Amino acid sequence: MAVRTGAQRLAEDPGLVPDGRLGLITNFTGVLPDLTPTPVALRAAGLPLTALFGPEHGLRGTAQAGQSEGEGVDPDTGLPVFDTYRRKGRELDDLFSGVDVLLFDIQDIGTRFYTYIWTMYDCQQAAARLGLPFVVLDRPNPLGGLRVEGPMLQPGFESFVGRAPIPLRHGLTAGELARQLGEATVVELEGWTRDSHSVEPWVPPSPNMPTLDTALVYPGTGLFEGTNLSEGRGTTRPFETIGAPYVDDRLVPALRACELPGVIFRRTWFEPVFHKYAGQALSGVQLHVVDRDAFEPVRTALVMLRVLNELYPDDFDLLPSLDKLWGSDSLRKALEAGDDPVELLPAATTPSGWVRPDVLLYGGAS
Image 1 (cartoon, helix red, strand yellow):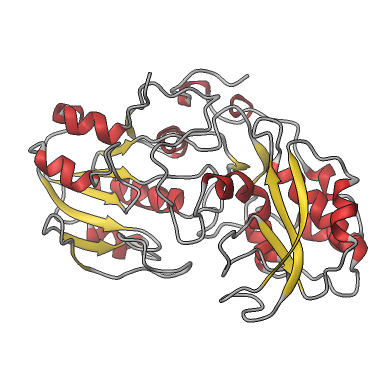
Image 2 (spheres, one colour):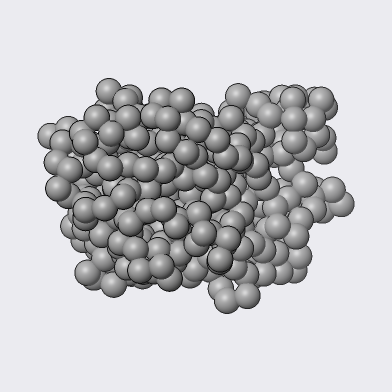
């Protein structure tokens, strides 16, 4: 059975959401299977869509990390576009003054420090303050829904890459996550199961998330943003490619000796065109995922960090952002002490280990 997204179901049955003026939080990933943009499809179905709200990277996705496109008019629908990025509290509430129901339709990638879920959370909180229904048009989790990895976010480490206590790889769809974090109605997926890794069609959710392979490694290698290694931004294989000027031919053999499941390491050389070490030739490693079910992205990244720390003690360095990405200071402290960070991984490995039973919409995960 082909997967039918919440947006597709709503376009076919407008009665799935409450009556009133609709505001849609979306971007370029909000499309139907034939790639018709969700706003266009909903308007064609006669739904009273009155405004669009864009996240980080903007409605069209032209903005790089940490940026947005601002406000304007959507050329496809003629609807006003409002920018939610970095807005909160009263400033965010005021954006929604002209709508009666808030809809959310953006493709998530299943990782805590990917910001679209926190745009959802902030808008969900605004809807609660304003007394507006909040409806998620659900989409698949490209990492599947059977596995959880990494620690819960700890109090005091909240940021826009982690607003609430969830694991690093959370194992939920956006709709399930919204139910865990607050009040939300979900237009559910049809035909999706927790053991699926598929998202069809794949629309790159942000400029540095070009492929499904990128999404698979991101829960782990995204942590390298908190180090002085390049995480591959400015290349065609971001997050799959890691390197620095000081990396030499010892790294790949050391990683291969760890015999990590589902992944093969290859030595590579690259020159980022922007971000860390822009314009410099770097030596490093590319991760090749060969078994998606066996591959553990967070464990793999922790082993990589340990090996780098051991091989290059005078060059390897950590950045302040690592604490926010990990969700506490435990990873930084472990590396600084020379301890094995793999020991920080919690025992819970399925969504049923951290969510309320009523949250899961697509079967259990134990």
